[in-house]
Length: 388
Image (tube, rainbow, N blue to C red):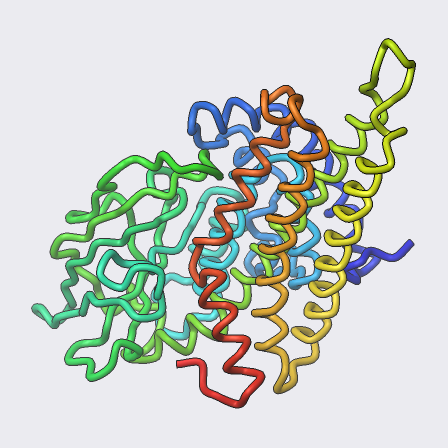
């Protein structure tokens, strides 16, 4: 049966390998990663070792040369095992695409080779305390200094903050007249002025280390720039946002699929000793499981269609990308909520992974662009208004 995301036949082994990794490594440690808010290092080492950090990088730099369809299918498999691992992976992949798209960065190919070989984990450092979830409008600004630039910024949410080898960061260009006149640049965490400024202790996705990072008078060389001055918004909206949106949509679908599977297993195995009935014999619980499955597959089908739009872009492609992310967030919320209700005490007492999935799914609601942003963007798109 064809994959719902339309992956090529040659990509099937990669998706299957991601599924094995998710089940054998990520899922087995997901509970302790969550309870201890611990970075999923074992899962990341496995992803690195199997070349998944370079999944969508060009073959010329050692990557596997896969496109968004395979990316979505792989993320979904990983998310079924561990949401935190999937979040770290999506951020890396979006950052890697920003590096790959650069026409200005010095040493770009060497960085891409390191990523492809599993030696370089990247992430995004866009959101700022001053502009909150409107990550496309940083308040920090690059200032010319002795042929280079300097920047001071407080990046409020940086996934993998203490574990990444680079951050793709943003700031306004020197003398910017608009918050959208931005420039992207690569930050090395060990550079002078770069400091992880806190510890992540969130409700869900607790192992993804989304900590704040401060940049204090950081020196940025011209060769560190990923875009021309003022061209950062174009890369953010045309490269980073689509890859991030597709990846987080697949992550939401993976969480929903995991909830459906765990609920089905519980209903089929647990029951009432005094009657001999299984939970699956109750029509109300079967109905909830049916709702969960239908809602999940609706979201997956929309993402599958959107991936086709991305392959053959049209005027409606950006709208579908936004809708796919919105649908997946809402599906994950609804499905995990129904799972908690269907499985009752076994879910609430954490005897099942459903309580973790329930919390992980809620991270998507507040992750920029938030659900409120997405609904507004989709409404603007449908009525012919500009997004910004």
